[in-house]
Amino acid sequence: MSKMAEPRRLPLTFVQSAPNLRSCPPENGAEIAFAGRSNAGKSSVLNRLTGNRRMAKVSKTPGRTQLLNFFDVANGGRVVDLPGYGYAKATRSAQESWQSAVNEYLSQRQALAAVVLVMDIRHPLQPFDTELIGWSTPSELPLRVLLNKADKLSGNGRSKAAASVRKQLTAHPNVSVQAFSAQTGLGHDELLGWLATWLPNI
Image 1 (cartoon, rainbow, N blue to C red):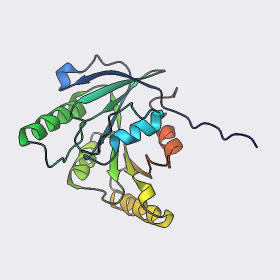
Image 2 (cartoon, helix red, strand yellow):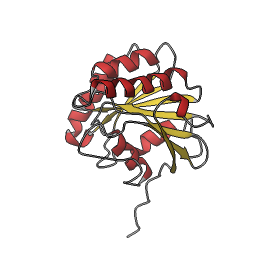
Image 3 (cartoon, helix red, strand yellow):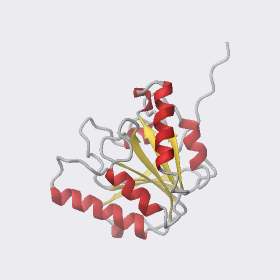
Image 4 (cartoon, rainbow, N blue to C red):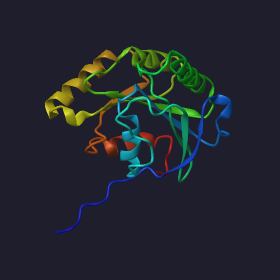
């Protein structure tokens, strides 16, 4: 019996962390930002894509990603892991600091080519999710809604959840939607195919 082919991986190398836009590394090719609510599984998504469980820090305590984390893609471009938002136990000043850094990056970083917005498929389109989507549309910034934790639902449940989100976002032509599971790898190749639009050599 032949072995199953190894899944494609997103080859990333950590560059640096930055607390604000001024501290970001020089722009060097297209950047794809990964955003999402705290505990939506953003870091786990990156670890699944790279095949490296230690690429992005994962914790049972939400809110661990508090800086903008930059990763070089092997053949050009970058991935940026943005601080998670909505972590209620963080101090107000900490939340404001994270949000200021994210807002500055999204609105002023010239290299930003697209955004992957990670959501829990069981709790999609929370207020800040819809705010980010609303902001991306007039700027015509491509945005991929990644409905993570899809393994928590049945196949029929996943399809219904994705269809419901798509229906609610029909007014946003720059937005596309897919189910994903960082746990099982569901949707891995589909997401890599979308990323390849801006990172063609992955």
